[in-house]
Length: 210
Image 1 (cartoon, rainbow, N blue to C red):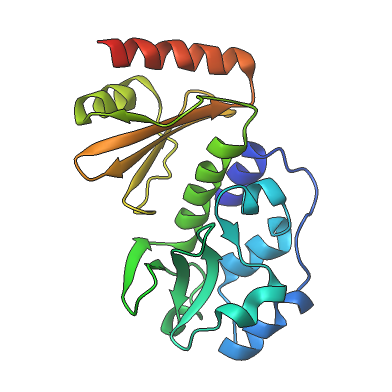
Image 2: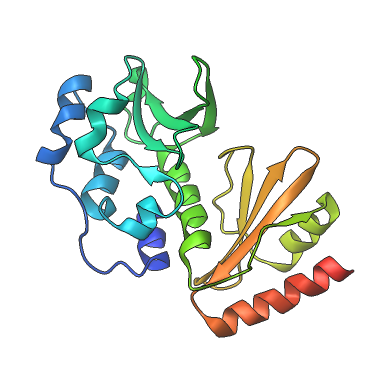
């Protein structure tokens, strides 16, 4: 289900993934690989906008650079400030939790399942890659966030990615991102449809003016 949503979001109609042989480094290192992660790499792993617009899915050629004895690291923040991985003890699970590291020894739970993380990251990548978007991030209040969540439908992809992020939108080709930042929120939104973007932009403008 999560992969169908991602493919629709990025208009992916054909296989654009890696081969199983490409994944051998991890399979041999950890004796196995989570089913959901293997499926993702093999079906959509090479799609650039999905996996390399903002943060990036680690390509097989770089697996060894991110080798960690306790975590299978598969995603990186664009400047390497944080990494996401799966506990070694969880690699046999089909859809294990995902943890984030900020450059030290401590790892924090980001998503309760790998599919939840991949869907959340896909929406985050989408807001940066869609054709029409707000020109800059907007700081909003808790009350304004609540108004946005009441007006727009949830994408059902919220997670603790970074400091916590929620996703909304009334159309398949629109994405609204609201990210927690201490005592306020950061708002970003975009669409692949000019009509849907203008509709969303007007609604958000009205919410922010009230």
